Image 1 (cartoon, rainbow, N blue to C red):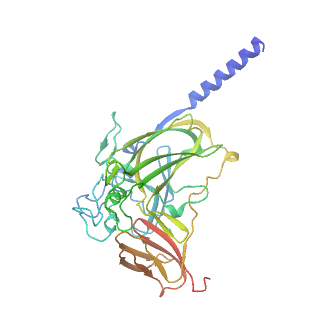
Image 2 (cartoon, rainbow, N blue to C red; image 1 turned 120 degrees about the horizontal axis):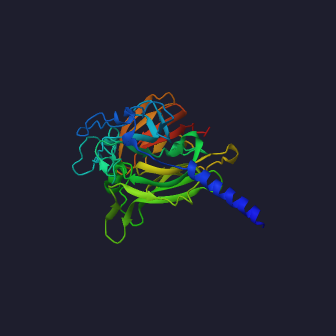
Length: 378
């Protein structure tokens, strides 16, 4: 190679490198410094049983929201007795237990009923401050993440983060904290979920990277596990935990999404309908490096679905899989309540008097789509 050609390629490589450096931008999710739409959600007094302290549009039929450059998936509808999934914000910092069998439990009701109005807390007592060192601070908002297992689709997870403008990014780090519902449920059970107190038990969060091209990336963090070296000891942290990533490996991403797994799962027949453990966690201070490039439409790939949206087919009875029992609500296709009852372990819900059709059964932290069919299976 001649010196002239070598110098040309050297200059070209330097120019590309400088262009990359100039266009790269470090972004850190900072909910504490965002407009009052999030901080104004601190309504209600955590000393009572009405919770409060969550984004006002959590049940507002929204399909997503944005904080700074970060876009978050959200799925919701109807009212507090219906459903929401994906991300929302919380701010009350409540870290108390609302399971009916918790020692000193502060609200009435059976099973996990107390969580309906009190699912907005974080075990660390607050979101992370913008100061250095960052600390958990009462009143600072944070993300509450609920894995809407039944709303997973072929290319979009219910818990997905992207950047505006379809910008590509390298993932650097994030902070994860246990949510009170699974934290205490793992210790005491919560009606439909059993305590994770058996050798081999765990509750795990999976982080998936969606690359602009190539294979999906995956990493995990164990939120809880049974320590076989200490009898009857459940290991889980109430603090914010920093999760770091190799940004050279986790590079040129279109997005990241989250799934969860527990050793306590709902299995009906041959179908697994996800964890009985309440699939919540809290998230803050996501740090990425925006590369300056945009995802190419020709390079878009479908992400492998972790769950297909399907309904449980039943004839007359639905078998409730529960640890100690609790409240069950059944809604028809018009979101009308057609059944509201309490169950105990081993109960079956009698639906023989209801017409055939599609329903949503709410129990514990789950919203399960079911289809009632006639005895001929049609």
